[in-house]
Image (cartoon, rainbow, N blue to C red):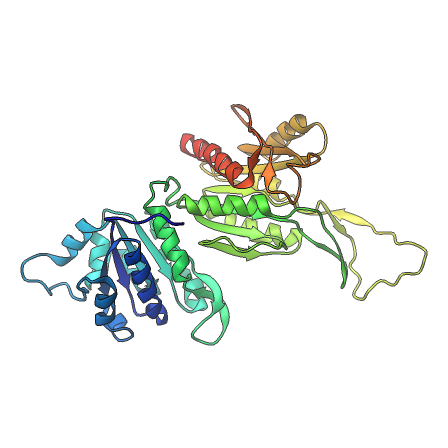
Length: 400
């Protein structure tokens, strides 16, 4: 994204996580995009990075204490100035304070006084991120509209590779630009997208799968993140890069997909089932490679779990479920039936026999089928189609 941030005041809160040094790059990048960056540092952050560094990078004073100005109330002044408050890194401690309304230092006091959008880029040990208290605090903050950017999988300071790494500065700056661009109509919403194929093992070297590339699902995840949603992408094996500011959950089999999606489903506002899970899996998987004998091979298959049906049967009243119908014949009849059978709110139907709308291409021809009517979209790029699908899902969500 090349948009500038002319005149936008961004309060950058820096806490005492080991990733505090990366906040220097964030401050510099925001300044280069013509934002006015005001840095607020916690006492612990000052032990890791000198306030003088941020003063040099931003050209503005750095704030560290509630009472450092005699002629104005610093936390109110900063809260009033800010177009956005970004906390990066956001430790478990500052998340807990913000969730509970504790205001015992300058940053937590600014957050409590804020009336502008707030974003947090968490950074912490994986066990601290997964701790029930931290997850509950994150849920509380999301419900209040706080946008979370990350955390990511990667190498952590404790020496392991796991979730908890702060999102890279360039992606954080990109997310800030999107939040301030006026296209944040999904701010505060939790969106889960599934994408790609699944693989059903036959033996250690063979599997059953399909031709899904995952491009539609990845476009949906990227579009939802760009509109401010907190996005989880549950993806089968694909050759695509993870979209920025999206939590990626890799899976392989349809059973994996079922497990990961149903576990996360209750907390989602919108679920988009764009994956192409296998409908059948071998009844038995060989522990060793099946040798070619010249007599052929007979496989007995059993049905896999119906992920969309399970989601439809258990979805909360306000949750929106979007299903996909990739068909080769009787497109509309099959899609209408799927809408009812899966208890979906919307079905995105496409004829995969068309060369510009099938698997692996960058365009799609979709018919949106809802409870109140049908809309045939023209040939669109998958990125454009993703926006139209999100528009429809958001309208349904707001009407519930």
